[in-house]
Amino acid sequence: MSTSDDNPLSYQQAERDTVYRVMAERRDMRHFTGGVVDEAILKKLLGAAHLAPSVGFMQPWRFIRICKPELRENIYHLVQDERIKTAQAINKREDEFMRLKVEGIRDCAELLVVCLMDDRDKHIFGRRTLPEMDLASASCAIQNLWLAARAEGLGMGWVSLFDPLALQNLLNMPSGSRVIAVLCLGPVKAFYPRPMLETEAWDTRRNLDELIMHDGWQDQ
Image 1 (tube, helix red, strand yellow):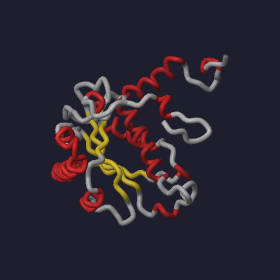
Image 2 (cartoon, one colour):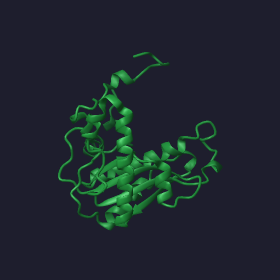
Image 3 (cartoon, one colour):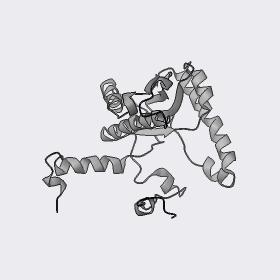
Image 4 (cartoon, helix red, strand yellow):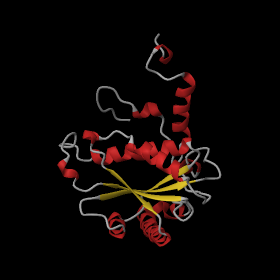
């Protein structure tokens, strides 16, 4: 039986273990300890994001670093407004949802907004029938950043509770661009031993075997 050790293109076992470990220990963090992220480390993390694959090599991601305290506070209030509306939409779990900590905007060292560039329609390669592949590509960049941050011992949380048009106007984004994420990044006291929403009994991770089908769709 062939193994990875027999494959000359594979990494050494210890290196492979580290790759799987960082994926297993990545967490969507909401609790931060303030502090700072070294400029060289931040550039390195954004460089890791920029190594992500993109359909048609369009590289649709754009990163806005939020440096002004008043702008950070405005984003915080946009998130709080949507948090209340989301809780109301959830209905039966409204009170439970409102008890959850869903962001760390005021506490994180760095706040980044991830956007899709404008004028994306000119990129046809790989998007003619699946135009959402620009979003898929940018999501790969975010995941790269997330894993690199974990490897550097920094926490990161993806916030999606906001009115995108309101945030786009706040950031003076051009017509045709699209905001997709607010990222909280910085030092943390500790990483959650399990995903926080699992710890809080919001939901549980599915069994992988339940999500794999063969040769077509099968009802679960």
